[in-house]
Length: 358
Image 1 (cartoon, helix red, strand yellow):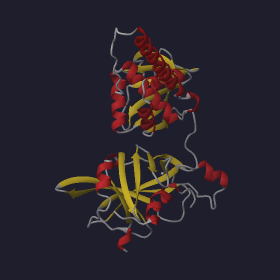
Image 2 (cartoon, helix red, strand yellow):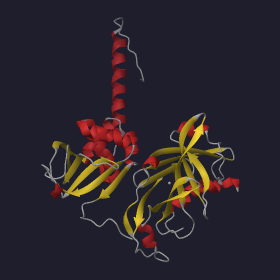
Image 3 (cartoon, helix red, strand yellow):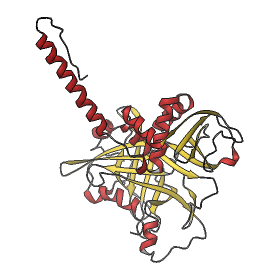
Image 4 (cartoon, helix red, strand yellow):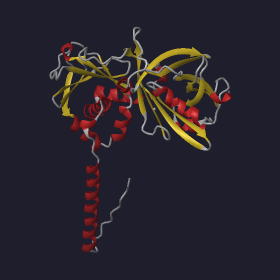
């Protein structure tokens, strides 16, 4: 699908406004020459030393991890070390998203209650039975947990020990991908997390959650984009304008909230990465609209899951739209696979209202 440059940028501008995304080796044993044998052994030693040096070069600094990255780290570590319910959780997270919820440890009977928080790790939208607590720098892991219960104690580890473990296991790629799907929710009542008019987290429609891909062509150049929808978060990344990716957390707004006009620079910094979500219907599609928390101009970015018949098959697509007025313009289409996005990048669907139709 051909998309004008301003339309591609609209997909990111609207959503992030806060006031304005073997090797194989063979060895032959030879008794003909001791010198040849020694040379072979020397070569093996050098290779082993080089491999060891390369492994040591990979380091994951646990002290610099975000809360979402910590949740990903713990889930991967526990799934590999303990299996069971943690393994099931990892699979659910990789197929969807994860929520780490903070509770008061006084509601449970843990062997090691830790610093006052009980961390529930669960597939988004579900009740979890896998928990952990933290005491000093040591985490304690449990499964089979119920409220007012203790569950089974599995073991313990520091965050750096876990980081070194997954590096040794070669799970850095999995760690990074899973971290993008983790959401942190505080239900402990011990900290004031919601402020500046936020009344709670906005829940993204279940059919929209997960990963989508798009490919758009402009003047012979193709831009690849990825959208990862969690329960209340949106991660958007592309290979041209937004290469590192940006995460927006969606909230609902209190009815008595008064918009600061204009917001101060400090207020703008505080709400960076916050989005206001709401649902609406237009042209037979169920849209989710996202605006910046202090956004007063423009209509933000809208997304809708729609079904199209492609080569005789009903295929779900993600409609990405924007524009002012009552009717949104379609800026791009995303698919559940990168291959499909590449194949369909020039496709227009007759039942959709495209920006370049105007």
